[in-house]
Image (cartoon, rainbow, N blue to C red):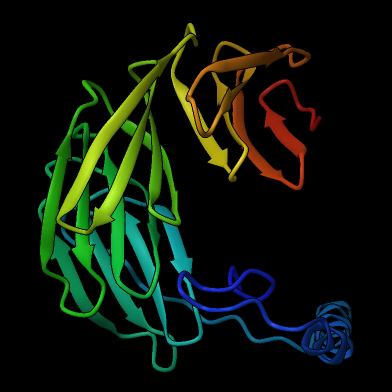
Length: 240
């Protein structure tokens, strides 16, 4: 879905006619999904993630073929979308897996063990371990050769990704007064939200601080940034 309107790295931009022809189908699919939910025409399927040590699932991402989940038992499990069976268990973290993201090459995960680990999405082999944060890694995002991670240690780390095995720390962003719970970015801005009730904006290119967004009365737990719009949710029971 992330490559529907933007080309994959190395690919050319699709013509506007492609999107014009695709738009009616997308709207029809959305209408069908909404109607099915309203009328009860849906089927609940359950994956049993329990193990001797597991007490919860902290993060997940899915596509047409698989579901990738990060568990409290320190593992990442990959499930087949068709039969919902576990096809791979990735072991290496020594703490709960709190966040993850994957593309067609790698899975990148952050953990309460304070590390970020990189895995081959096809083989499940761990190909890199990034050690920088000194407390739990709470969230991460990567795209187009760049990754941003944030931590309970109140810092944000910006990384340059040449290859899965060659990831270097570019800059550490400091300014929040509590754990940084979530980050998002595009080619212009990095946006971070914290338990200190603030959202901070940084330049993607220079990593310099731009501004602070105030308004929430309690810590901010979630955030999404797209097309110059920031939407945030807080334990003050508000969305801004």
